[in-house]
Image (cartoon, rainbow, N blue to C red; front, top):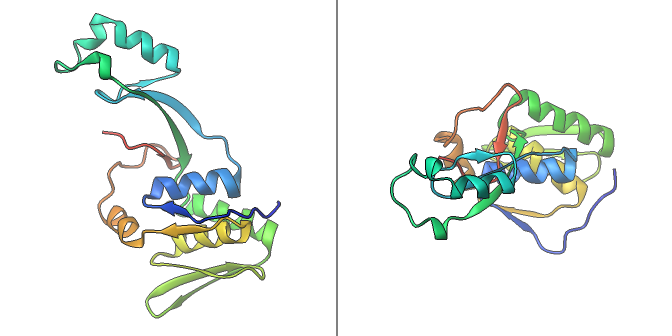
Length: 174
């Protein structure tokens, strides 16, 4: 696994963003992809299907009166919950151990730290997030994490787990 060097740190404000970075740069997983509109958050298999539904008067009955000309269709990518599901986080650890060397995780002054091989350690308030950040660091991906936002999301999750593989989206859903 090659080490990447990102020129500027990528900002991470949500667990879904962290999961997407892990999926793309560390695990190289293919995300589950669907399309949704910004009014009803209905999910569609393709952009074409979503646009056809928006023109369908039957579909429009499901929602309150809105200006359909201003509807936005967006792609949503779903990655496993690498940062919050223990079994899925362990897959990250195993992958990073194989690529970068032994893992070391420890608690220091109320913070969790993790490192792989001879790469610099990463710090977080949860051990699973520390493992994710250490894997990204070893891969050469620099991140600037809003730890307060991640902690708030951990305390008050927006969405319950979707399935047993622990998928999350990179776009918010209602």
